[in-house]
Image (cartoon, rainbow, N blue to C red; front, side, top):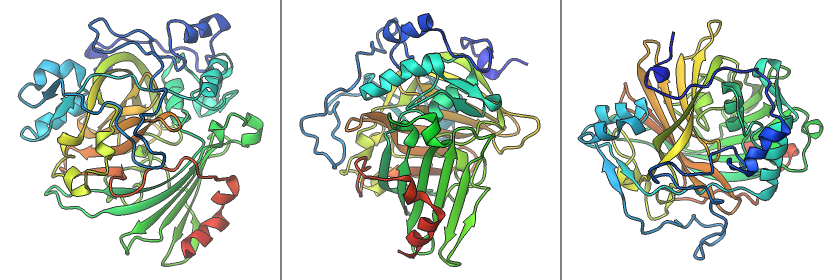
Length: 450
């Protein structure tokens, strides 16, 4: 059976060999017609998507290290705004989930469209690693693990869907970070409660000095602690993420402040509920998709131009309060920024032997960063259920492209979840010094007592 996306006219890529590193001659494209990350260097035919010229390579003069990010595109005017009344005119550049949002909220949902800036940039060692990954990296364990990859996306010239999702899973995100963020899951009437979360994140895989041997099958470590409200405060989650997930699945532990006990948590994966999400996010929706890819068949559909949240500097501004951002049904569109970008389109269908609350998902990945920007999630009837968007920006103090806010819209119950708000707090600290010893179950118990 042809996929829905095929029927809509997407360019199709035929499935190729599972493990498909490219030859040296093919890899030269990363210095010629392709960017180091495998994107097309040239813009599109009508000029609405410009040529990639290196992204943001200098910080704005007014930026102060440690403070909220200055918008390098401050003062740009909106080109036009998509509303329910003119949505049909732009439908070819929208995902089905975005179209469904206009239909669900015809009076209030809007998408302000700004000039496109291909702002993605990375340290030089990331670009060098990409060249080596292109000719060396391979999938193992039926696509559930990697070998001969380092630092960043293993397959800058992807040949199948599994390679694409692995590019997202291990893309360069900086080596370590500490952040304090706010989360809210507004009810359909717009009322909400703020949940405060502190996270320590350490990615030894992103360290240029790491090797497959020194990593010991660990790609990253994650420690998450709820600090408010009081009835949730003290709940902690610890995760060790692995490179070969068939050889050794993800390890996870939780600390319950009421019991004062650390417990193994094998259910911290797939479609189990996310931390304090009130059922509005699954565990594997964190970072748009995370964890083992083994429950889905992955099909690389091709490339497409769509409107996506990008250069979302306004949405993280300290001038905006949470009450200004959160509205009934969806975030306040006045503070969002959308641009037209080329994306990789990746379709995931749950395998017959597995179950997941999302039998089908379609991901739209930024060609310049491998960040998933938009995700459409379908229910068992084949209908759009949830739309997820990653409002990303260039963290030019690293630099890397990451989301500053993730939002997951439930088109059935009228609710949504926003994760990552920092407007009334501090931005991410990429200068923190973390190590593996900070992510042990023993440390988890001590952290719970503080």
